[in-house]
Image 1 (cartoon, helix red, strand yellow):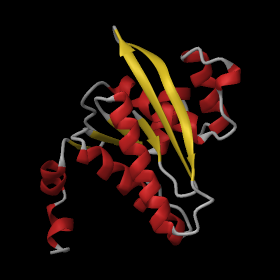
Image 2 (cartoon, rainbow, N blue to C red; image 1 turned 90 degrees about the vertical axis):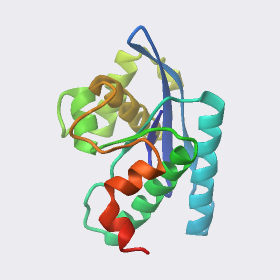
Image 3 (tube, rainbow, N blue to C red; image 1 turned 180 degrees about the vertical axis):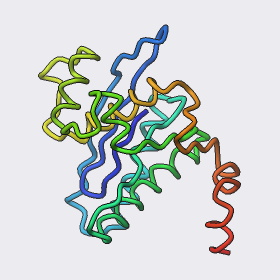
Length: 181
């Protein structure tokens, strides 16, 4: 399962891997702009990720890691959205794999500077997605791209963060967790 986190639009995509060949199961977006409360948006993200996990029973979650931008408030909100999606996966014992946007673009298009449209086009060709099944929001294909990037990396990418559960998360982030107690 792939997630492109966001507090206005969250993209998701699920792949089925059969004999090492990926096929698209579903993709979509969660539109959050209609909710005034940031906290209500976070709740909706949590609920949607839980429902996707319960419906499709994915083995792993690939999520786009936050990138450093100029707007600190936007980065904080994006980090919260990512954290809530990760918490949903951890609550169902789904291992999490984070990938930088540059790495995802590189895996799908061969260049880290690809546009969202180029990523969508390559996914359409590679996964044989009918054009009419593509959504106008490119967050959905970005989520599929995270899932496909993870598939391309194998099950244990060495250079990316991986958490197998809450205890593993705490163990790998002991300094951060220690400062909150």
